[in-house]
Image: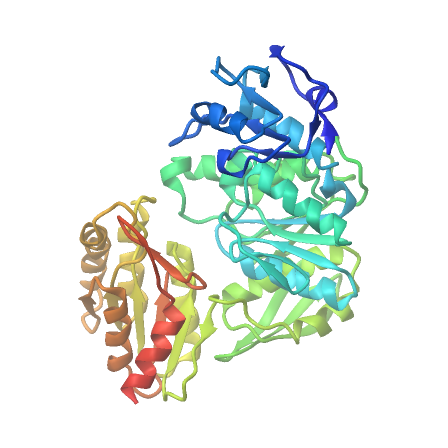
Amino acid sequence: MKNLEKLLKCTDINYIVGDTNKEITDITADSREVKEGSLFICLDGAHVDGHNYAASAAQKGAAAIVASREIDVPEGTTVVYVTDTRKAMEDITPFYFDYPARRMRMIAVTGTNGKTTSTHIIAHILRKEGYKVGVIGTIHWLINDEEHPIHNTTPDVITLQKILFQMAEAGVTHVSMEVSSHALSLNRVAGVEFDTAVFTNLTEDHLDYHKTMENYAAAKARLFSLVSSDEHTKPLKSGIINADDPYAHVMKEAVHGKTFCPVFTYAIDHDADLRAVNIHFSSRASVFDLKMDGVTYTVHTNLAGRFNVYNTLAAIGAALSEGVRIDHIISALAEFQACPGRFELINEGQPFGVVVDYAHTPDGLENILKTAKEITKGRILVVFGCGGDRDRKKRPIMGAIAAKYSDIAIITSDNPRSEDPNFIISEVEDGVRQEAKNHPAFHYEVIADRRQAIERAIRLAEAEDIVLIAGKGHETYQILKDKTIHFDDREEARKAIRECK
């Protein structure tokens, strides 16, 4: 609880109508969440304008309302007029919650792919060191093993500050969080002081929003500007960057002051501070030699695939930056298990492999298909689609990748949202047909119903084949034009396997 007058000193005010000597019990930009004593901030969003709900918020007991234009509210309601309500929210909210990120070590992971697995590996290593760790990401937010649902990879400013406040109050010492390009460009991380920043990779995704890869890279690089900012209250900053990625230099160039914020690199193909060599894969594990400071260490993980070696290297770099000894890191890595929906093996006693993965980008799909080639003696069958109302450019690219690396592809629906599933499939199919000319043995089918597509792939699979079900991973829903339904690829795969026995 804080006095409104103190809160308003954090931001620029045009003028105020009403009494400012009031105690604020909560902050929200959602009129449905207003309660007695709330500060309601009117945000002008893409679909909803909060100014239209100001009167409702006042009637529910809002102590004050922040607006950028004249609003009609009941007499006696305090209204604070500002030029930009979003900027006011970014200024006021972290102060209201006493800047909780300053009370914990904040480790941020950004990149197109690998964020979820990397953050969870980092959290696992730190927990093994005895720290109390929070995780914020695509799947959920956690305080140790206590799980809470989440709706965005990186939540909005108010939600994020509330989560961080709860973590700090619960005694969390370290937070391992995913930070999306949207969050960085929209400043959802306002008021968060980061300590370690990790860059995984940058591949085609979100171009419906960023328009160009250069803009996308610049959004990611902002994390490295933030972690190396002069406005810091905590010591020991660092940047961890994938030297094999072509956009690594963009991240490095965003770092201010290499003495205050040193940059460490990791790689497989290039020289780096942390380099993996002599890599060996199985269907359930990876083993590699880690070269660091002229010394070689053997690392065992329960994660399959080259992309997971990168994720492991990223986590090693972050853990080292947080002061964890390398022998402790290696010991912890040997115990880590895969995240839900990230190359998750489905085993119902069938003679072929079934994997569910979140891969929903060209690079993600290519990674899991290449991993399948490394661990499979038989054929590769892939079930995949593309989401609606998202970057259309990647659809034919993903189709071409499926044709190039699989033996059988079944194109299906993902989360079509407001788009026609058959139209999305047709754009994917364009890429499949083009690349299929180079692979005479390749076969593909179109089955728009995702449940039927999964069943078809399972029925086609033979001993030593592998079925990859890509795109939704941990998700337990499917977003259609008029509704959202329960749908879990893992459940559907298990059901199909049992019915085929």
